[in-house]
Length: 122
Picture 1 (cartoon, rainbow, N blue to C red):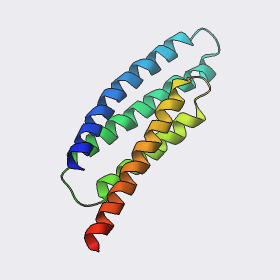
Picture 2 (tube, helix red, strand yellow):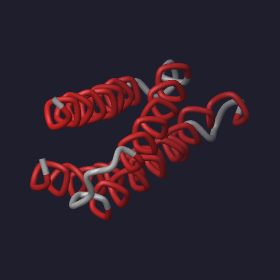
Picture 3 (cartoon, rainbow, N blue to C red):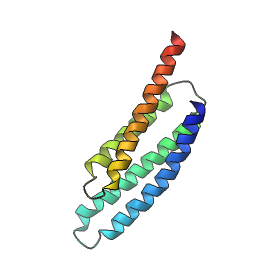
Picture 4 (cartoon, one colour):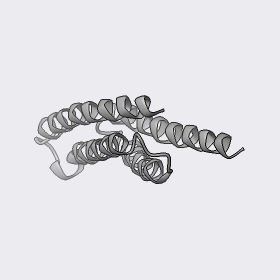
């Protein structure tokens, strides 16, 4: 689990950079029309990228820890990223992909760590 958290943390930082560039392009491309409604996808993309970056940093910092605090924090951040991404995916369609990936990563690591901790107790 230590190596997996480290690798996923690094991948999340790389994905955060990619999402940031995508969100900036969406924000620039949609500026010609009604800018208030069209920039919501780009802004949601930037928020999603920030949450991916923060989660990746937390996973890297807590990859040696056996406590659940890091996983709980990452679960909350990934669920927020999922919710923001799904709600605003109409103007930025790739955001739905990043949202569902955040959901899978957040729930997956939390459940995996919960199962490992229960096995150690028993």
